[in-house]
Length: 307
Image (cartoon, rainbow, N blue to C red; front, side):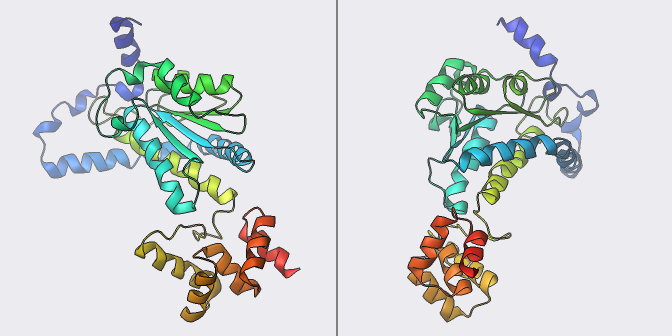
């Protein structure tokens, strides 16, 4: 693609549109600019709401595959890639997932999290190489993330993953995007032109973060990683999380502190197991067996224990 073609393509994108009414924004007071930004951001949830049926359908498809052992892989460049890596990195401490279960690929590799890696986002081949290193299967899901919906790295990842039989999702912030068209599930959250022309880390980035929150969180709910709205698979890796684990067991069971500490100690800090031992009045090994037989779903294990 020539530079002229690329300029023409960018000029046609909503996310790149220039807003002449904001041309004097730098002459406003700080509070006025803050009010403008806040007003812009207020429209993002509505744009996400318009895509909820598509988001829900994608989540159901992801959960079905992850229940069979599949992985969730995000692929993007720049802000989009960083948001994918962020969401993936937060799943192990929140849901006790294996670090290899939810993966974030960013064009240019880990270095690109903190600095721009020249040319990386323009390479479909780099995306294929990064994806091949994971040896994707039909049970895996690859989510291409790109505000413009045209980033070669995200497109390359989705196209290659689909050719390999994996489930594909394309998350973009422009209508009729190449990325959504390339994926089995296209999600286009159209937030409109940015306050600062083309700065898609703003509304587009916020929209992508909201959608990724839904993809991972609701998938984990479907997989039994929560009990109601409690994070019963939380990994107690520091003092705050150990205190949170205690609180979660307390909220779920109503047991006193001594009983909770005893249950957590006997279950080696596993919140689900501790709750099950208290609510079902079973020992640790029985709790572990019931959870294994129930695929890790605490409600199912409780029902099984009851009869």
